[in-house]
Length: 493
Image (tube, rainbow, N blue to C red; front, side, top):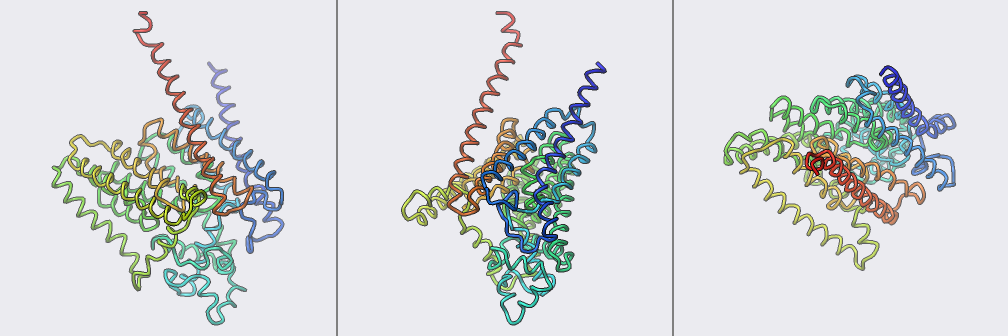
């Protein structure tokens, strides 16, 4: 018995060290870059894992190897969670160590963080309204170009592809960007570091909230050490981690504290970054008033729906001048990226019309099904939170993969606040898709980013999803076979 315990401890410690070392391998090219340049200013090596090589096949192979090492250790740590982690504290310590390592990773897969800092800088320091004035507008007005010499945050934002776009996110996110940009003191290296530290803190808060909600270490591990989350949330510094936090806070107050008002407020704050949390709103309100009659539930939905919209609207008062404050949202939705609409654009004549018709049709179907689902659950008697989140997931998945023309891998993060309430096979599928999306994204390490390169991305995603389905189906059959062999009926035969 002691030998088994000792052996388990050795294996568990080896896996913990392995995931830290794999993380260090991931950030080594970034460390080397910093040592050579001493600054992130003028960084342009996007979709170059090695940052200083022209052999894209080699760099992609190395990236996939490191990603594979991260994924293997991640999966084994989840499987060995009972012996590897005695408490949530031990989980959070390892997540913190790995996350701190990822702070050193340059966001080579996406430049959005420099746009965040740029619009935050013109807001916090130069008193511009970023919903009406772009970084480019400000810099090219009068003699403002002189600021580029002393303000490297502004300079890096001006070099960004989004420099000619007004803010495309909600006002809650703009206020966060404003605060971080202010703390940068005009230095891009400080700004990036501050943003990464903030994202690591949000990441740890999310891990802790998941544990508080579920009281299970496995879900904190699934989220906290997921290579997909680490790359998109900490390395690339995407704002989706903040939305995840607000949704988790909403769930915590609803499910654990049984309080609907803070739940609706937090959900609205999440929508103040990206608008998709509104999909969850009726499911959460109806769950809270599950003991009430249908008419009462409906009236409460109206009441808290109004509160949700008011909380969402209040931060806009800081910036709003007219309805053009919403222009950025439509700018983003008109773009084509790594979605099914890329295939339409690639293989059909007059793709603009077909894209518009397809999206409008799918949106109409989505809205009808969503409406009737809400009507059904309004009249349902036996309502459980798990069932509500399963239904919400059924709408989030098609919303992400079918209705967004500019799909990006990090949008899959939207599924993680409610992944713990899904069926085991659904959890495996969504977890697998998140990891597959990073493999698919490596296409751009080979070819660089371009909308046409979204076609191989989509094919890899579809192939990966198919393989995951086959794996889950085979695993389900094996479980049934084992259960049958252990059943009394089999023994009697």
